Image 1 (cartoon, helix red, strand yellow):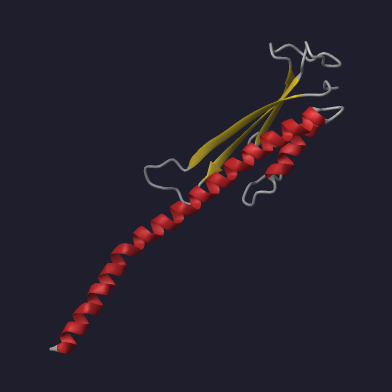
Image 2 (image 1 turned 120 degrees about the vertical axis):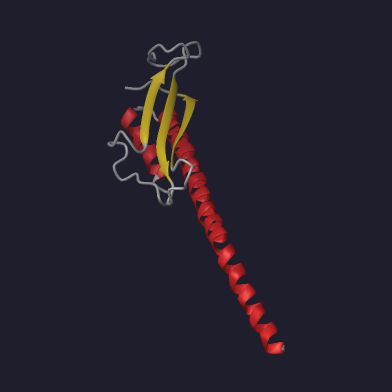
Length: 154
């Protein structure tokens, strides 16, 4: 009688594991994708800030220098493909503009009445590791940073 009870108990545990294992796997993979997405979002934000900051404090700012600094900063995040950045216009795309508040071109040198701002926009398409059913597996992350410059661009 006791043997039969022990055997039934083992079968029940096996069924419970079989039912809960797919859910645990789904949660683990979903959590990993969310963590990767958050890390990439922070990297894009940091890249935009670093590019704008590099342009703002440089005495001879250029678009190429700001793009290179933004790509440099994003390259520190594992899993981001920045090997062709900024030459690849797709991922990540780094756009740099130098303008006054009204959109006019910067004057040389910028004055208190005519400030010049460096704006860096970074766009990156994030792809999940697993294509989830009913959920899009690609997301576009974009961040923009604007900082007042000390010198006008060449």
